[in-house]
Image (cartoon, rainbow, N blue to C red; front, top):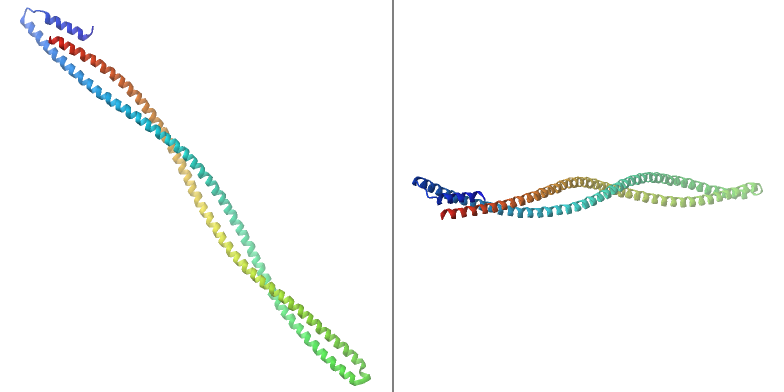
Length: 321
């Protein structure tokens, strides 16, 4: 038998007894009413406690629902972060591949600049050789002019010698028998003069042909020198282009390195965030379990309070009979 049942029996015994003295009865009546008031107050307080516990239970239920929703959102966020992690790793791999390609291109640009510099040096040497050859050809043309002047002089001398031999032959003929020997000499001299003139004419013709060839070579050399100068300008422009490409590649390499550094830092922050979400999820699950335990305990307490208030109300009814 519980505490409240014992009190109820005691009160019944007191009320059932017929006291012999009025004072005792009044005391009992006073205590009885006080007890009834206390029971009513206790019952009301128990109802208030039940109501408050109900509110707490509802709050706990809402908290449980919120925790479950938070867990779902955290799970979704974790999945998104892991998907973002895969995308970031793929992006980092692509950037690294681009970085390797840029480095290869930079190396090719360096080799291109070296090749261009070597070609430029070779063209400068060739240009110098053309200039020397051009000067030599011009000097040769000048010397050919001098040789032509000499051959002209020889031709004039041969003509004069031929004329003198002719005059000598005429005089020898006039001298008769005495001039026969001189006439033979004059004829030989005349033949030599004619041969010399023909030789000079042949030499002059050959020299003229050589002069034409030399002038053609000089013109070709001049054209080649002009082409070399134009090629040199093209090489300079190409070298500038390679240099600009290399500078752009160097700038891109620096930006790619910065991007890789930022990706690494972002990856570290992402890992920290994933760990944080994992910890929060674990704590949330632990809190949900704790809240469930509290809810069960509160429900048990509500059941006990319900039994208590029912007992109090039953006692109150019995006392009011």
